[in-house]
Length: 96
Image 1 (spheres, helix red, strand yellow):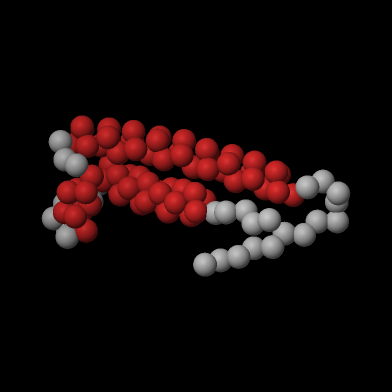
Image 2 (image 1 turned 90 degrees about the vertical axis):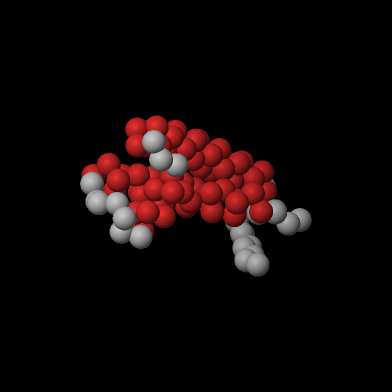
């Protein structure tokens, strides 16, 4: 578990500001994830292969590297990072 304490000399309450910032970041991450999922679907349709199968075959050196395939791998990795960040933000609870 990570803990963070914020302190400000200003009288403005931090809790609503931080909560709004976290909500906004979550919204942006979810939008990025939707765009990435759409891009993954485009690759799946183009190559008639689901992403999980493609990644397994790509990592097993069963598929030759191409620019499209490198982009596909990049989109998959980005999708995973979005998911990790989204889950982390969803678990954040503001104390007090």
